[in-house]
Amino acid sequence: MTAITAPATPLVPARRLGVGAGLRHTLTLAWRSLVQIKHNPMELLDLSIQPVMFVLLFTYVFGTAIAGSSGEYLTFMLPGIMVQNALFATMTTGFGLNNDLTKGVFDRLRALPIARWAPLAGRILADTVKQAWSIALLLGVGMILGFRVGNGVLGVLAAFALLLAFTLAASWISVLVGVLVSEPEKVQIFGFMVIFPLTFTSNIFVPTDRMPGWLQNWVEVNPVTIVADALRGLLVSGPVAGPTLQTLLWGAGIAVIFAPLSLRALKRRV
Amino acid sequence: MTYAIRAEGLVRRFGATTALAGVDLEVPTGTVFGLLGPNGAGKTTAVRVLATLLAADEGHATVGGFDVRRDAHQVRQLIGLTGQYASVDETLTGTENLLLIGRLLGLGRAEARARAAQLLADFQLTDAAGRPAKTFSGGMRRRLDLAASLVGRPQVLFLDEPTTGLDPRSRNELWDIVRTLVADGVTVLLTTQYLEEADQLAGQIAVVDHGRVIAQGTPEELKAKTGGQVLTVRPVDPADLPTVRAIAGEVAQATPEVAQSTVTVPVNDPGVLPAVVRRLDAAEVPVAELALRGSSLDEVFLSLTGHRAEQDASTDVLEGTPA
Image 1: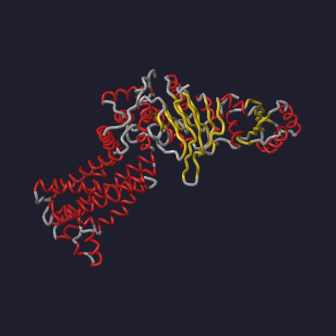
Image 2: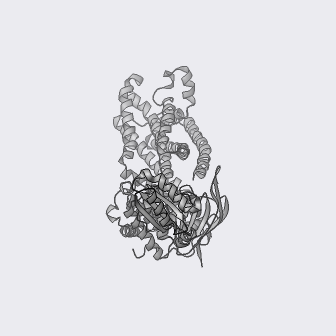
Image 3: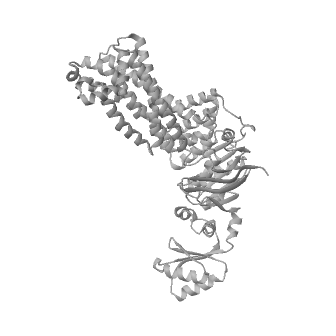
């Protein structure tokens, strides 16, 4: 153990960090979140098997009853299930963040001379990569089962970009929950309690006009309905401009409210 | 003398509780400084303030000459931090954890890899390097924690209760590592509730209780402070404890402590020993152990704070403490 520490750090430490260094820290921390998957294959199952199972179950169990045939139902439901899955996946961010906070990893990172925003940014970047994987997987499985895109590659890319942008905004809610709750499992409970009813009371599984009248009013304003409509427009057919614009507005609204709340809560907690 | 750490009048409140109630510290460069105190004394809060993790409400502090608030970024380039709250990522392997930190500190890929391999070898973790940290034993885990805080070759190292919960062997291994670091010129601020640990490692000790430094000095100075010696009596039959306690208290003119079927009482007059023996004999109390010894830091702590350090700490550590 001759030179564990010597030679010491430069005598004059740098005064500040450049943005480039911050981006490098973000990439390194994103790498860290993605390497975790290698050691925790359960997470990969969460990201892969669960969405695929949902598609299969809904298509073949409910398809004929709701839409007359499983093929038609798949076309109707796949864009919606992509939204639902993406919202569930945003909980990963809060779960991981809470884990870092409770286990002390966050403090270890904060004691390092790295950009203050890098730990959060790195996590969100990694979770966006996971989102992209889930979305692509759902689309791929859907196409194998017979889902046909109506607007070509551009439509697919636009749907991808829109959904990623929306989940990026929605993940601020997850960040807030992750900062506020005392243990990671509570983030999952929150996700279950809020996202399940929120996504089922939209038009992603059942057309609005098949629901009771009082529920229809809610379903029509539910942002999940709006995002699902936008994806249907981009991936299959139907109006695009209106729902897309509304989706972006919802995303912006969520981010404007929850990003400052989350950052303030985080500052208070650490 | 240059000071690696200086703190003046640190105050930190959490709601209604005052964790730090005006702490002053001066740690000379290249020394080990021990912050000794029970759970909740404010040790961890002090370290968090000095390590730039927490802002003090009042007072100020410098590390390596840099203000922990204003020049936090510079301070972070000088320090390493190991504690229960500054931990490695359990899901990553030993190597990955050290790589992560090396890369964050700006080392190149090859450099970070070499540094990780060297630290893992130094801390006898090479065999476990490829396993997730959550599979590590307590001692291995602490060594990895310590290795992680050394990746950046810190000048000042904060060790917050580095051996809490470790078995004696792992504890000794960790102590050896700390001694090696100090030989390399690193300044160490160590917090501990183990009196023996402070005694073994630290050149200077500050005893902290309720957010205040209530005594400071070398271990010897602190032990001298209580002045006297300690009488311990262990009756063969624990049923005799109340009798022994009464006799010891009466003869020594002090309030005895009873723990582990043993009565201990501070004494100033060596003449109490024969007096106690006579009284025990008269009361026909068979005694398994009877000793008069110089006071340990534990008694120092007791006399300073009016209460013992953490029970598990004192029982753990007092075993084998030279009397």
